[in-house]
Structure formats: C-alpha cells, structure tokens
Image 1 (cartoon, rainbow, N blue to C red):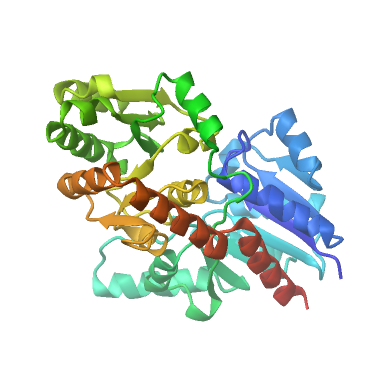
Image 2 (image 1 turned 180 degrees about the vertical axis):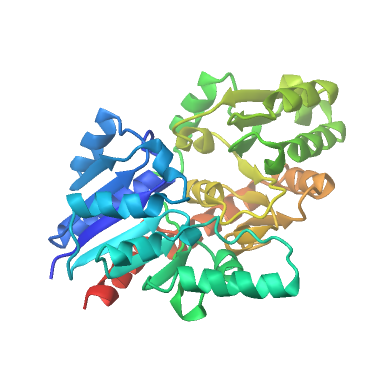
Length: 387
C-alpha cells in the first residue's frame, strides 16, 4: 500500500533550513516507495520553494498566516485539508504544530485516522498548584488521544511531554538528522579560500557562534569567555584568535557594545544572518553554543559535528544528548564563561585534540543524527500506522 503523507507545518516556507531539508528528504523517500506528499504551510510559498519541493515529489500548499494561531483554527485547518486531500486508510497526517491546540480532535472528526503529532514547544512547564497540575495533565492527555503517536526530537522533550500529561505509550523519540553529504569537512584548499573571503589567516584559531543573537542564546557569555582567553594570551596567540558571529537578533547591538568594552572588537566579526551556515562552519575550528535556556535539541551542534568540529556547549535541555563530554566536545554549565574560556584555550593549543574530537563528532552524527536514520524511523512509524 502506497503512502499519502500530509504534513502540516508552522515553519516558514522561505528558506532551505533544517526542517525544510528534512521535509524534502522525507518526500523523496515517500516518492521512492510509490507514495505522495502534500505539505501545508501557514504562509505563502515562494515560487522557488514550490518548485524545489515539486522536484522531490511533494506539493506545497499555503494557508492564511493567521491560521497558525492555535485558538479555534484547527477545525478550519482540518476542513481545508480535507477538501484538498481526503482521508483514507493509507493517508498519514503528520502535524508539526502546537499539539495541545485541539488539532488531533479536529483531524479525527474530519475523518483522518493515522495522526502523528510533533511539537517541540508544547512541553513548556509552568508552576501550578497541585490540583491545577492534575487538571492540566488530564486535559493534555485528552487532547492527544486521537493521535497514534507523539514524537519528540530528544529524550529531554519526551520527558517534558510526560510531565505535562502526554501518555507514555504514545511518545517516541526521533532525533533530527543532517545530510552528511552536505555537511562535510572542508579540504585545506576550500578552508583557505573561505577564510580569505573574510580576511582570516589560515593559521588563525577561529571560534564560531551560529544562531539567533538573543539574550537567552548566551552570546554575551561567549564574549566574556573570549575576552578572558585573550587576556591570558601572548601577542602571537591573540593575533591568531578570531570570533565570528553568524546570526542576528535583538541582542546584537548590546553584544557589539560589549566586545568594544572588552577590547576584543578587532578580533570579532559579525557576519549577520546566513542562509547557508556550512561554509562558516567549514572555515572554523570550533563551535560554541552557550545557550542559557533549555534547548529542545540544539541542531547547530550536530551541524558543526558533521563538519568535523569539536563543540563547546551548555549542559542544557537536549544538548546533553548530542555531545559526549570530553570525546566530541565539552559540556559546561550555562553562563559559565570561565569554563568556556578554559575549553577555548585547551582547543586553541592542541590541534591533535581538535582533530580527534572533530572526527569523533562526525562519527557520532553518522551513527545517531544522520538524516537517513531519522527518515528510516519516521517511515517505520508511518508503516506501523497504516498496516
């Protein structure tokens, strides 16, 4: 029986990001098995995006942006999907959308039976009185009953789901994966060329931050760590160290002021938001992910590991499941600039350690975070539902 996959996503269909790459790879696998894919987005799809998905065997549809608000819209969403792709025994609906919005019940009433829910944010916990906590768990349990499974991108998210009342027998952990062909270590020639574009010397130790420049992402912690590292460096070491920031956000101006105050502005480059992070990682020596909040997963870490970089990251959320401390990189307490500084100094002064950790990280990605493995598990879940 060939699958007909419907995916409802509140991700923006405007770039080739991690989720979009995963969706496209999934569509290609469904097509290879003789099935079809229809993806629904809450935004107009750019013509290039529609064509890009069509080349993978998927049809992209647009819903009004205001429908992405979970209140009262699930019923409208389910009815609109039904008009385009009616229910059937081999139809699977995969919802990348707030799972506690009532979308599962709306889809079931519309006639869909094979429903998978995925939502990394639904497990945000708020302190409640004991009786209210019980009521919330009961309500959350009820809202997901029509679904066959609720998937989580990490065990951390799964545990959080369990604490808010999602039934344990419905939860599955399916990690996000990367295309290990696209995320490949740079050759010496490519590395030199990429660095030359930014005026960075081939012998410099390059530290990379990639992500949103928001307070909760901890870039100010990394700036302090970098400043401390340069304070203890000799003139040659200082001249051979560089911090590059690939990203943008509300905290950028404050961090730019901070690096001036720390006296490290001449060693820091703000690149702004980059659609393709691979070249930035390929010209770097290490990635630092100094998040202050509990990341659901921490995708940038596996991107860096796939390129062969050791990673220094906060021991928060799902990140602890990615990095093998002391083997593929280092885990530090959130906000601990002193520990980040020590790790930077160690990696700066030990090329062999960088190469050893980078190789171990890439091997770990092949084993656990390869997009092929992710899609295998997703397709197995689909098959379990329709047979």
